[in-house]
Length: 201
Ligand SMILES: C[S@@+](CC[C@H](N)C(=O)[O-])C[C@H]1O[C@@H](n2cnc3c(N)ncnc32)[C@H](O)[C@@H]1O
Image 1 (tube, rainbow, N blue to C red):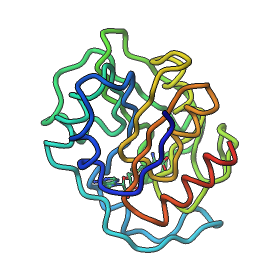
Image 2: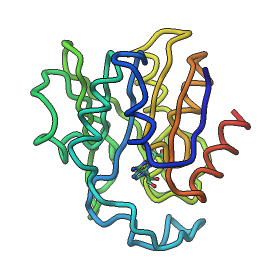
Image 3: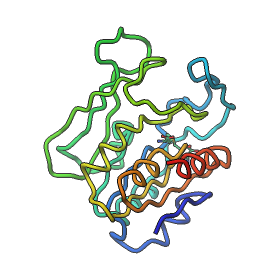
Image 4: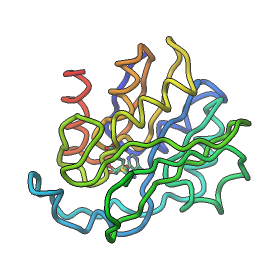
């Protein structure tokens, strides 16, 4: 089943059976105030929104309940709601680039019993190793990074679930790699962007 759903993901998660999707791959709000900013590079302005609030524990409990494996970007903001893991993913964004006020890397918590990984993909203003267009979502993830997660942690035909879909990067990656996808996004503007990106993929 491929599905893009507009709404609060908790309503949907509560209805899913235990371990019914292969991979949860998501990027919940980190609660760092990013949605209050107003600009992406020079190409996009975006509307001030109030979505950047860390979800409550029930969201994490449900995400872990309904999926067999999990990759949760921003895991370092949610350690109080996740078990210990030996397999963290590091997305290093600044290879060879000067330091600035943004973080050098992003971290994903995973449920996997494997070695930790570092993935290099520059993603800083005009310098991007991942070539897709920046859309009007302030925390759009690099498609190359998310494709790498899909490729590493699921198989063709598996279902990949992203309950915090944003601009649709996870669903695009899943579609390009012949996985099924379920994506949920609460904001209608971001949901439209996600639908357009998935249709074009
Ligand atoms: C960090 S962003 C995800 C960005 C995404 N990885 C991308 O590449 O565009 C988190 C998204 O979760 C959405 N969101 C927040 N709470 C939600 C909820 N309860 N249910 C569904 N979506 C939610 C926000 O509107 C926001 O677009």
